[in-house]
Image (cartoon, rainbow, N blue to C red):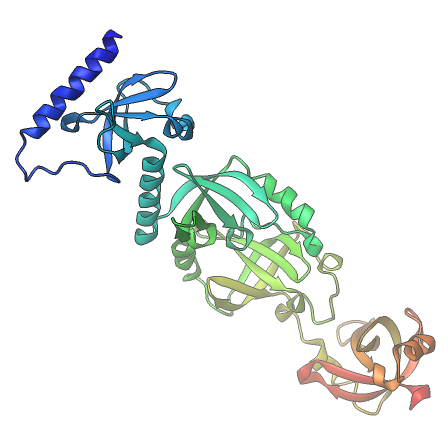
Length: 377
């Protein structure tokens, strides 16, 4: 009771002092966020010393809403509070700790966005679309598409459960991010790890140009290609070798051709939008140019049926290798129109078997060979 009486007396004293201040002295208004010092904590009320502005209290629903903040406050600690009532029946200013914390946090986020600041944030949970982060009590979202190459989940087939499993490994870790977008009214915050690396990445990419050959390690494989990492001065860069750039031959599944951990050399074929595209096949002789000395339109050839698809049948045709006694091979297409229907095509041909074909078109500059089954011609 003595402590309560002391607080009341102090509050009255501050109010009397404030009343004597000149009109130019700015008194706090409802909605203002001010800094106060914790005077007293009870089971249901928190008292703040607001200096010349008197004593403020956090109680009722505001006390409940701020439990996560209040539990960490001690007598003498300072904190920002928002004025929700200038003077209640007890003569105190009513305060909101949670709203002040939220407003200050959004102000901080707004400043981060304005200055394009890179800052560290902790991953608190994940879902199939990305990761949830927290900035000063505000929960935000880091989409999978905004992850850096280092943290992007490389999952064959895009299995969502496996993606979630990969993302879960990062819970509790700190990521460097930038604010991509926010709306405090809708409580929306989106951040990007990729954007946080832009300046750093641009500097590193500036040391490379199209045509450079790099030696690196396959760091990940996806349906559409393979990722390669290589050292560049003090940086480690990563780029994509598209499935069409793995080899001159048709590659259906990158894992049949290359494995994570393989050491390879690759040629940079494009640098755009802070991304590097590379090629393995462009470091090899173009077999279509070599084969043009042995294959031409109108020739009769033997070929092995490799696979069926909706366009027709892929057929492997051999030609002499200029480097050794073994033959090399190219794949041509026997179009489904040669058969009339998918059913007729599959009844005429069998995967793995050899048949006689006629070369209907051979265009090495386009890497294209059209074939017709000899019995159909």
